[in-house]
Image (cartoon, rainbow, N blue to C red; front, top):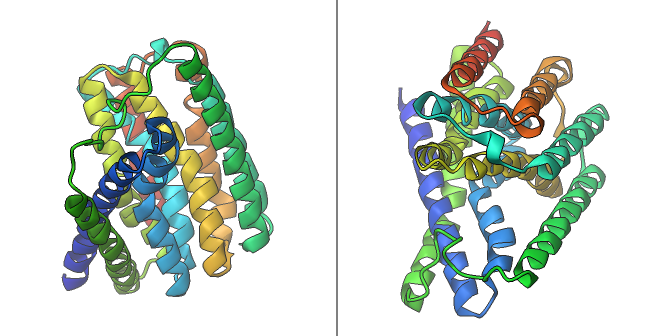
Length: 315
């Protein structure tokens, strides 16, 4: 029982520290004169994925690579089946009004490249550099597109960044940064260490724990964001949040984690989990290309599919 409590404590510290780091970094950047456009494309994206990144690094260093890779693959599957499925049970996501074809194709390309690299048997610095190069291309394209919108007359205001507070004093900015930088590694270490103990106690692998417990836990911020977006009828935010998070998980988190050690690929990933992740991603095709809304029926289907996937893992 103590391992479950400490895992929950580690997850809570991770989520709170990640939020604190984002708030501190965003407001420091804005106070230093960095445009809101740059902040939203880089600092917010990196900051919101800090918990997953710290878990991956901690898992690699603690010789639990199954948690590192399982967290990324499991989070991507959960992001589509749960993070889109559960909000759709509350309110229809009007994805027919969204234009997310380019970013979706980027996500599919990232998924296919990730699977191809996984068949090398392990992720190392060389493959990490390939993933980070692909991330650079995605960010460069997003920056170019955002600049084009800005030149067309759209203001570079702060309202698009939820964490922005132009009047935040420097002492509070510093406090947020310290809390984030101290809390993230502490929470990651607690979660990874105790998740490994849970895996041993129940006779399951680190990989399964990474694909389920850790993956769902680190997807909670995306779930909260998507639920609010669904209730506010902001389907573009919900879909963009999932697609962006999935791309960042594959390209940045594994890419950076390889600098801290090699990440061997469990054969189970090659036989099952990576293909479930890719199939889940392809389920978005009707919503992205054929103007289909994610109704309650679709929400129920997506959520049920995730339940079947977890049951298959635990059998």
